Amino acid sequence: MIATILLVADLAFALLAYRKRKAGLVIWLALCVGVFAFTSKVSFLVIGTIAAALLLGLPLFVVMGAIGVLLLSQVSGLSTLDDLTVVPRKLLELASKEVLLAIPFFVVAGELMTQGSLARRLIDVMQAFFGFLPGGLAVAGVAGCVFFAAISGSSPVTVVAIGSIMVPALTKQRYPEGFSIGLMTTAGSLGILIPPSIPMIVYAIMVSSTTPMDPRDLFMAGVVPGLFIGALLGLYAIAMGVKQRIPRAPFSWATARTALRRGVWSLLLPVIILGGIYTGVFTATEAAAVSVIYALVIEIFVHKELDAKRLVTVATTSMTVMGALLVIIALAITLNYFLVLEGVPDAMVEWLRGLGLERAAFLVVVNVLLLVVGCFMDIMSAILIIAPMLAPMALAMQIHPIHMAIVFIVNLEIGYLTPPVGLNLFVSSTLFKKSLGFVIRAVLPTLAIMFVSLLVITWVPGMSLGLLRLMGSEAVVDDEPRAQPAVVDAGPSAAVDAGPARAKTLAELMADMKAKGDGGVDVDAGGAAGAPAPSKPKTMAELMAEMKARQAADAGDAAVDAGP
Image (tube, rainbow, N blue to C red; front, side):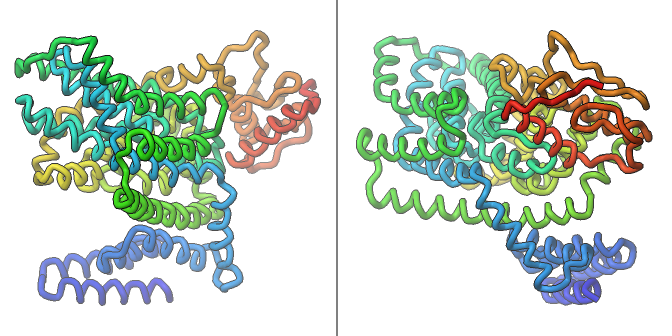
C-alpha cells in the first residue's frame, strides 16, 4: 500500500515539475514506473523516496530520515507509533557519544581563524621559509594548507582560509591562474586527512558497532599519508616554478625571524592540539574545545583582529554548518539501525566471503567503488551510509580497520575534487569567481597526483599503521610479532591458545568464526574446546563485543585461563 502511494506521489511530482518539458517528463515517468514494476519493495521504497526528494528539492537529512522510517515500518515491522519510538531513542544515543562534541568545536575554531589573522600569519611564515625554492610561493601555499588543516579539521574551510590569500598572490607572481586555483583546491582537501579531522571523528562513530576504534588512533594514522600527499603536491609546485621560471626570493634570516615572531601563535596551535592528543593530556573532544578557547583569546587579546561584528559572523556561519551536519548524522543513525537490524552488514560479509576474493582483489573493488561513490556523494553521506557496511567486510578480509579507514578517507578526499558533487570544486568556483568547468580543468593535474597517492597508501599499509606502531599504540599491537606468539589452529578440533590474561587477536577471532562456520568445536572465553558449535557463526558485532569484553576483563586484572 505504501509503495503504491509513493509511486502515485512520484508521478504527481514529476508531472508538476516537468509538465512543460515533455522529454524530461517521459524519462521521469518511465523511471518511476520501471523501478516500481521490476524491483523489490525495499528497492522501490529507497529509490522512490530519493526520486520524490529530488523532484521536490528536499535536503539530504529529510531524505535519510524518510528512508529510515519507511524501511523500519514497512520492512522491519515497526508499524505502530510505540514501535517507532526506537527512532528518537536511537537519536538520543548521540548524547552518549562524547566524541561528537568535537565536531562543533572544530567548526568554530576554523571559522575564528578564518575571520581573524591566524591563517594569514601562518602563510607569512611558510612563505619566509619556502620562498627561496623554485616555485617557493606555491610550496608555501601547500605547506600552509597542511598546517591549517591541522587546526581546522575541515577541507572547505582550509580552501577558503588559505586559497583566498594564496591564489591572488600566486597569480600576481606570474603563476598560471589554472595552476594556482587547482593547487590550492587540491591542497585544501588535506583538511580531512591531516589530523584533527571531522570526517575521521564521524567515521569512528559510525563504525563503532562492528569495528570500535579511537579517533585518536585515526588521527595518528592520517599524519604520514597527509604529509606524503602534501610532499607530492610540493614537488609539483617546484616543477611548475622551474618550468615557468618564476623568480625566487632569496632566503633572509631577518625576514624569517620577523615572520616567526608574528606567526608564533599560529604555529603553536597545531602543536598544542596534536601534542595534547597524542601525549594523552586531553582527548580529541577536549582538544577541540581547547582550540576554540585558544583561537578566541589570541584573536581578541593578542592579535586584536576580531570585533563584535566578526564574532557575530563566526557564530552564524558556525551554527549553520553544525546544524546541518548534526541533523544528518542523527537521521543517518536511524538508517544504520535498520541495516543492523536486518543483518545487512553480516549478509554482505557472507556474500563477500562467498566470492572468494583475495585481499588484493577486494582492495581494488573497494577503491573503484569509493571513487564512484565520491563522484555522486559528499564525504559525510558516504561515511554515514557506506562505512558501516564496508568496515565489517574489510575486517572479514583481515584488513586492519584503521588502514581501511585511511583508504576510505583518501578515496573520499578525491571525491572533493570530482564532479558532479565535488564540494571543493563549488567552493573554489564561488570563491574565485570562475566557472565550474574552469575549476574542473584546473584540478586535473593535481587529481592525477591524488590517484598516485591513493595507490601507494592502499598497497603500503605501513604508511597508515607505521606511526601507530612506532608510538606503541594498542590499536596495532595485534599486528606486531610477539615473543611467544599464540598458537592458532583453524582445524575442526583445534583449540585456540590465546595466552594468559590477554584478549584474542583479530586473526584469532576470525579463526574462531571460520571454525564454527565449518561445524568445528566451540572456543569459549577460556579458550577450551567444548561442544560442537552451532550451525550459524557469530556475527562480526558479536565477535567484536567478545573481544571488547576480554579487553575490559584484562584491564581489571581478571585472570583468563586460556589453556586446554
